[in-house]
Length: 325
Image (cartoon, rainbow, N blue to C red; front, side):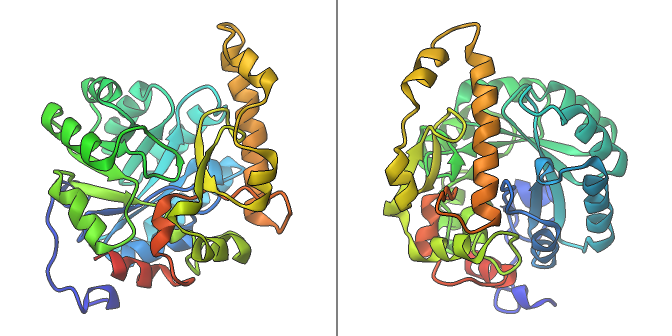
């Protein structure tokens, strides 16, 4: 029995644990630039699922190698998946989907677009598909397309998040949808996990607490920021992608402000140009975020959610999972 389970003999059974054949109803959330193979390996050893954004790999060969390594490392009671951006901002989408389906994994999480093609292709290979949503309108659409579960992104998530509180979003979706609801946002302790399950969620997707993990592939400064800052230090900025994004309120963020420029605001109102402006803004913002995550710079934009409130030290993934179970 692995060390994550020695103090927690009771296995928590939910629709999510049944779907993914995992011991605990927790997904280590896919985080741009943060998630990696080592983090997911450790997550699987602890009986939860782990997920990596396909965009964390610059080349398709690197993505394929990660899939092969995770398949070889998979253990009973653990599960792994990949996150796909399925709109036009991701020019690699179709080739990423092809490789993931060819190599195989347990699940795919879709974000920012129509998941129809992903659901159809993944289901041919027996891969489950969970879809990010922020409200019932989109939840209804993805359920009708055949999604296996819904990732309900609430207003306590890091990065791009929804407008509804965890309770309001979960209870609405549980009452109106017929597939499992997985809550994303606002979880940093076991009490938080229990709270989301009490609202009717089948499980939780947890990201920010894992930024300050030993295995995370970001700078020690980024990890330490998650220790030093708390929930009150999280602000929403439009300067990364044009869409409000939760980040740590560092001195640099305070200096440049959190609102879009006047030119971006005007262009965002133009029906024909809005889509292209967002794509350009997204590309610029992602490059800035990557620079901050991978090297020490005064231009620091660190993405995180308010659940870093419970981060007290940089710990191994195993120790973070133990806090959650």
